Image 1 (cartoon, helix red, strand yellow):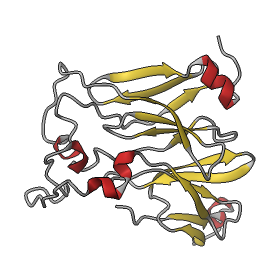
Image 2 (tube, one colour; image 1 turned 60 degrees about the vertical axis):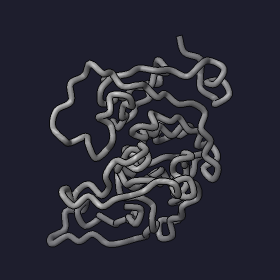
Image 3 (cartoon, helix red, strand yellow; image 1 turned 90 degrees about the vertical axis):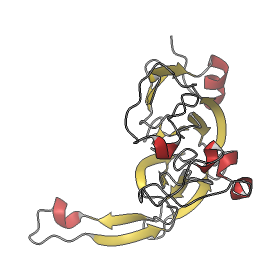
Image 4 (spheres, helix red, strand yellow; image 1 turned 180 degrees about the vertical axis):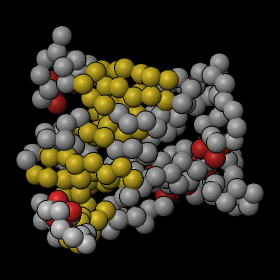
Length: 229
């Protein structure tokens, strides 16, 4: 699931209302990700943030792509958790899961062997026009807050990882392949929104529902955010 690319297409035929419109390939960032790519203007330079989705260990993670040259987009940075490093997966045994072709692996013996449990899902930023932060839900890894001001060296500056709510009923086997039905680990996989007026960060997780969190004032100041009440 790490083989997807980001394609930049010329859609001017559609915008101009031409008959028999065609999309034309402008550029490609190989392995830039295929899931929920978002724009990010970092220090005035246009970028995209993309990732693949799901995947057992080492999972998936966000890439930062410089598109200043649309014909030659380049991955300039990436953000990984320790569980996204392949060498950390060596002790985990993977077993094919024949009864469910959509799920690639049986969840044994560790959560990192579970499909999707260690992967990023959506990719969001605080502000597409003046990007400071990446806001990345990582399923069982919680929501990770990442400083993108140097896109070549993304740095985690905070995270929120809720435990599961055991009182939330889960039905069916839809979560079995993600490993998020163990009533211990919650899975955060929604879009993440930053509210500039309050400095709040909004997101939702599977068993604990909707969350509102905020960065502490000292961290906000170091990141160059204005003071909020």
